[in-house]
Image (cartoon, helix red, strand yellow):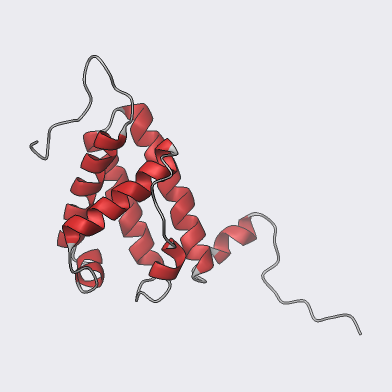
Length: 147
């Protein structure tokens, strides 16, 4: 299927595993070519076809409740040399790809899942958004214990 062909059809625009597979395939082709993300992931992934199958399983489990993914994304991402800027770029490419290949409701759904997953990974890796805590009225100062 050409890269610019939407995967929606007139008869059925629901999200299914085949659509998730196309999304994952196109997205990780972009990741591989990206000047920021490519060097990180290309150095670690030996078999991109297998990696895409694993990530299709992950996203199908997230979005479709397929239950086919077995793994620990936090453990896989924690040792990577990545920062907040990598997460921001990853999410920007994900959003871009979802609107290219999915109908609007499915793209919004998948973007929402990615935002929550990315936020959880950032927090688990100690890359949380401290400035947001300030917006919520949470003090960033350490309060000394009471005597």
